[in-house]
Image (cartoon, rainbow, N blue to C red; front, side, top):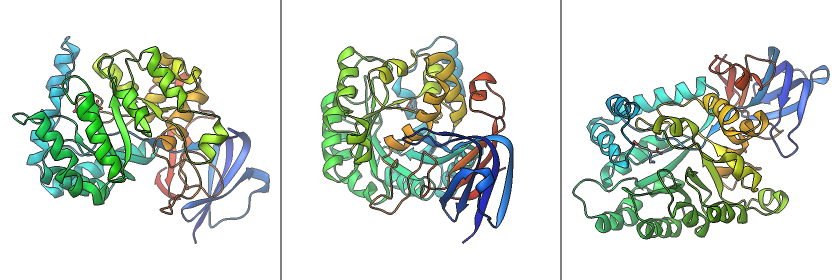
Length: 405
Ligand code: NIG
């Protein structure tokens, strides 16, 4: 099995339970796993040696919320928004029309290009969703294509009620035939519970049906105004509720109530509902930034994700999200890095040990975890906020294979 020693690391941030920072460190990747972490002076030999040259090493970013299966772009809508027009869910229909026109080859090519772009930016674990198909054939096609590229696929047939469809009948379809057709390709289900998308009652039906079909649950909630998304996510034991821009005290309390002691919930593999904040989207839609500081202080686990999509966040840069979280959302660098790595892994339930399906943990650097590692072109992650917008991704390994260096 091929092994790589990365040595001469100025700071190695484990981002695991102990959150250790090892100075003068090294790590060894063997096949797809991390085989050794420790003092550079004590490092074992390996087939290949990579001199980090005094750079910092972190886990690769875990991007737990994207919508990458799409064609077309929405530049005109973005320009109108920057001129003062409010974002509305209806823009999704523009992308649905363009995506339905694209053949399998074209959609796969576009998706591969976006995944490669994300990897070059340090993202080593990627979730993506359906949601620009919105009929049975298209949702199944998008789920199938997504499953050939992304690490995790989420079914989002409940993204928007297509023009001309009856909302209740469309919800039936999402809970019935459409769910059956996407089921072989997806691990998760999601629903956009928002004015202009799905009501709380419709969202409840979707979550119930998808949960009964054995899918893990996630919710798009409280993005454009206060709403039922967070409460529904808690009611159904969802792994995450995403966006969370408009929260009432009761929403924060409900989320906090899903988190007991770290040992009791995380280590035993039964964590609470993660609040996933999407700062690039908040800036592009001119929504208030999600209250990540408040959530962390209340004891809620927070993830940062790119929400890369053509409507509200056309970027897969997790470094940009980390920078924004530090400069504008009141997180420390360590908190922001944790949210963009371990937090995403928690939101995808890939944070601990070997799962039942045999996958290795991601989002932290520990022996036995997946060898997803990035080096920054900087001696410490503080530079992500200290030097905003600079090209700080130095080298990236995904499953032990160099994807950028
Ligand atoms: O996460 N909120 C709903 N879905 C996407 C936007 C999709 C679109 O506008 O195309 C989001 O922001």
